[in-house]
Image 1 (spheres, rainbow, N blue to C red):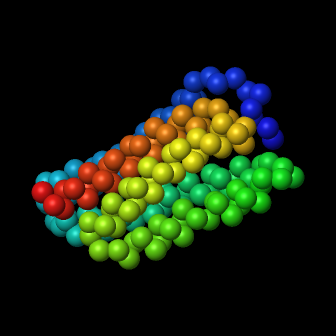
Image 2 (tube, rainbow, N blue to C red; image 1 turned 135 degrees about the vertical axis):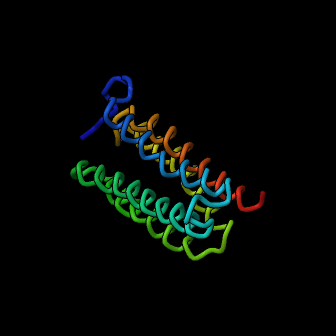
Length: 155
């Protein structure tokens, strides 16, 4: 399916709402790190939860690219997208072994980098035009929360 002929309308309500809701765990966990723990949850626990959630979401983002490649049929660039789709989950898995705060810094940078890369899917006509705008918004929100969580370790 080719999306480049579609008009650049607004982001549909369901993906926008659900995407923004998906940012809540990032920011709640980063805020918990900023206040040095919440109730029975220590900074170490919150850090592991934030890094794990980031790895799960980064894997999900690779799945978006995989799904678009499947839907593209025989388009020549599908093979490249299949290969690129597995990189976010593999990278996130490796980054989980880093010590703190480098784990959150690296995951945050990866999240920030995926926004423009995913926007390229829309610009090339491989995804609907609204997806590029949504991915920039959500990657910025997730990446900034991860970096805020890392900064909380130093403050």
